[in-house]
Length: 238
Image (cartoon, rainbow, N blue to C red; front, side, top):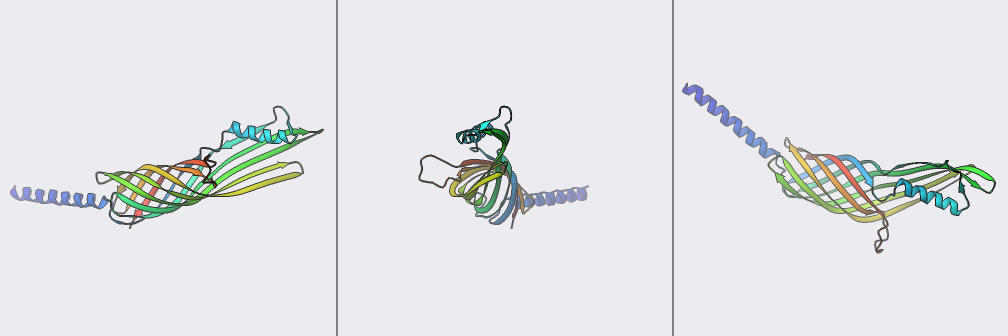
């Protein structure tokens, strides 16, 4: 019986030691990391469908085009898939720095309608697209909850390029205009992470990119887009 008792005690002690070592290995250690993320981004200031309908119809009316009743149709999408690559360095389990590249996707508007100008009636199609990509650099503060979970906050700069494209097409004529808007603005976010094994973690994050595409930084009126992104990321720690 004593032999069995000692064998059980040794086995339980070994399992406890292994579990402790495994838990400790899940803690974030100093070093580099690399990750990818994907999610959905929403362009908060793209305007509503009704607002864009009014802008398009008003511009055409000012140039002599009168809408044929019940002929106007439009579609609107202010969110898209976002994708990002990032890398950084953990100084400890509380503080990190990182940089990355992100594609926030595009917002788009489409409309068609019949318009009279003089004695002629023609169909006119309009498209508006806003697409944003850029580089990020940020500091992260983390608060571990046990050895596995952690909460974190992110604050940094977003160096972005926003392409604004407007196209107009009618019978026998088309026109387009594209502006590339470069801006540097702030971004911030919060999230929760789960560390598993020795090198891997996953994280769910909400991030706000502020006033993207506003090139006139001295203007008191913000002319860019606020973009909200909800993303799921996977990280490998070296």
